[in-house]
Amino acid sequence: MEQPPRIFGGNQPQFNDAGVLESTTASSFMSTVFTWMVAGLGVTAAAAYYAAASELYMTLMQGMGFWLVTLAPFAFLLVMNFGLQRLSVTSLALCFLAFAGTMGLSLGGVFYMYSLGSLTQVFVITAGTFAVMAIAGYTTKVDLSRMGSILFMGLIGILLASLVNWWMKSSMLDFVVSALGVLIFTGLVAYDTQRLKRIAAGVEYGAVAPMKLALLGATSLYLDFLNLFLFLLRLLGRRD
Image (cartoon, rainbow, N blue to C red; front, side):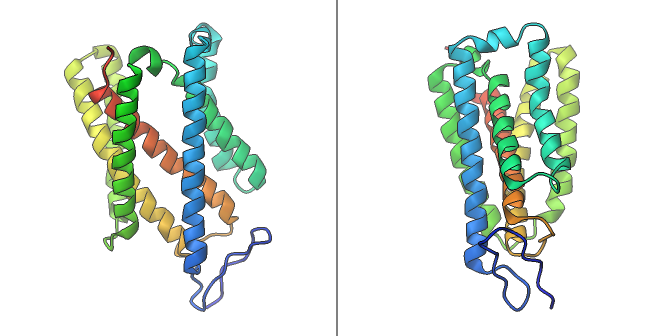
């Protein structure tokens, strides 16, 4: 079998005779994914705290600043996905960090809405849930690919329900959306982890530098973790 192309820098991925990444390289890929995910979460937390402590968040929420902070993360996501082939690894990494930073600025309001103790407690719960589901997704022999379409449809459903509740202001619907959000993103952690494991194993390996794939994988897991945290915060967060 022809081996997938070797295309990344000096440390080329090593393939066996079946065209599959060697286990050491696969482990290195997953380690890189989780390292960048944690780095992104750290940037987001620092930016959110700074925005709240300096009252930059309140300033940005006025006038055009609101739209800038709200839309900037989506802009960086679009650049990362549509510019994947053209961007260098360094540029893609900077886009990821900029995305994480602008997400932090947009989330500064959580420090006004919830106590620091409550934020810490929910973060620990989120981290524990994420770790359990990531391990489950990585170690399970069950193919979770079919679950992806179901989770995606559920995600569309809670987005539509959230838009409806923006006008209705129903506390019951908000609870239902939050509970479903927790379930959906809990499932997505396992699904995305297994998907990334398949990429690392060479099953879905394409003509893209491994570091770029790792950064996109880190973005997926980052979004899973952050959304899981926010939905749990809506269910468990305290304002006192």
